[in-house]
Length: 193
Image 1 (spheres, rainbow, N blue to C red):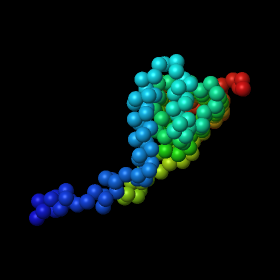
Image 2 (cartoon, rainbow, N blue to C red):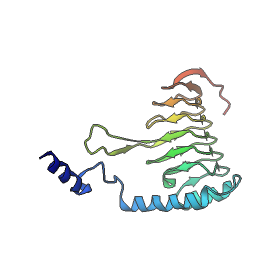
Image 3 (cartoon, one colour):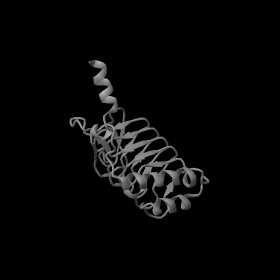
Image 4 (cartoon, helix red, strand yellow):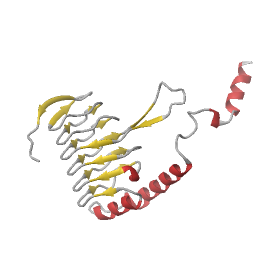
């Protein structure tokens, strides 16, 4: 009897199990596959100083970038069409920008190497485990330091700093320095902008 149940579950169509079906439309999946292929073949192998070339590729996929943005070749952008940057934004090597919803990076914002910024999660109270995303803003002169993580809903105010390896689970106040996991305010930062 138990063997028959296992066999029936194994042969059941995947579409009946929400964990095995994509929450994204076919068009979205095709667009992301085209972007991932372009990233692997044209973006990632580009010379380190070819910021203009990478900006062009991102713009071709719908990103809105101001002048002077420096996005490094190993940076991962999940959906360029959800990325908007003002001028002089920096996204470092191996930074992972998991932007399922619009992500706005204000002037001179920095996402350092190996940082993880995500504005999406799953609704674990729903048996279908759907993706839930929300817009995110990282303010002017804000800095997400190396290996820091920014969780959905944790906007960074202007001038906010999230220290190395820290985890922001809520919004960070402007012109303050945060550290730890979860991040806590450790001091104020001088306002220079």
